[in-house]
Amino acid sequence: MTEISLIDVEERPTVGIRRRVPVADLPAFLEEVFDTVASQVESAGAHLAGAPFARYRGVSSDVVDVEAGFPLTEPWAGAGDLVAGTLPAARAVEATHRGGYARLRETYEEIERWVEEHDLHVQEESWELYEAGPSSDPDPDTWRTHIVWPVAVPEVDAG
Image (cartoon, rainbow, N blue to C red; front, side, top):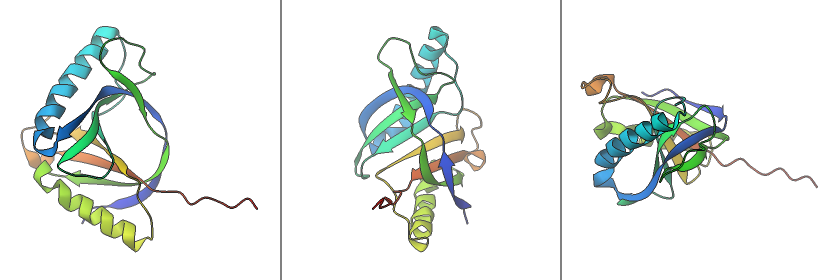
């Protein structure tokens, strides 16, 4: 069982590359992007402020709209083909997936059940922070993926 909770997330400046990518090509895309972005950030003298991320927008299908990169200590001011952005402030469901990526879908299914049980409504975007993965240890049992899935906040009637 995955530990799932509701949290408030603060906005974080990011830099990355955004593309529409077939799901089957995601591992290769992420590996290439993380290397490219880290190299360009270092060359520009900027500073990484955490684990690499992948932010998914829209409903999942065979092709996903994904932005991948790193959070930064300051907003991106560098040049090149990198996109300055943010991981937005949000009320969100969070969970940490432990293990290889092949079983990541199971963690999302647990989150979906938890959201339904708590009468919440998730937005059509989420992001994953790769706290430990293939670059830190070849053993998938040690990998940790932090999932953040913003929820819709009900509007308050000021009337």
